[in-house]
Length: 240
Image 1: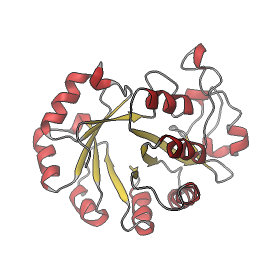
Image 2: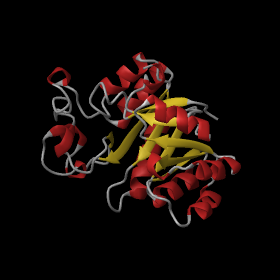
Image 3: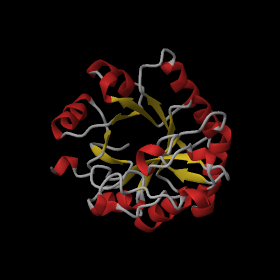
């Protein structure tokens, strides 16, 4: 189980455009050992690393990720929104990011963010790419999702795999979901985290990860409550 770890949220997303190879490289250079990133499907079925359903915020393009094939998405500028100096960044495929992970020896939290009605297809496509890049397996690839259907498909495909149950708000049936899915970790929005909630999760022998924490004082407080890892846009959070 991790202890007092900072996970680079969409890469070093305070320093480089989120969910790009530039952000992942920056996180690695800053000493991060874990990356977090989001995966959904392009129109052609290729798993791509992107957060929003819509393209506009980080590319300036109209439409949804799922409206375009990956060869088209790969041409879109994905860095200029962040800074003129980041212009030229592109939307990476999951395969590209996994090769980066393989080359650097990093660990990763792969968040499955299926477009509507694509939970099963997104899981299947993502796992096929993982198998292609890591035919002998990878001990520290963790899959998480807010989508319970995705988590159920993941658990069926990976009986012993590392899963993370994501909660933005407290789910009324969260304890039964933990029993059903047997996640390795539970990932909580920092706004719903309390010392008592943290203690309850730790008593269940689950890892407790918290998002998104961008100041050191808050991180230290959550660690004192029993949090094992925080997601941060600043991979250098504990050294700042």
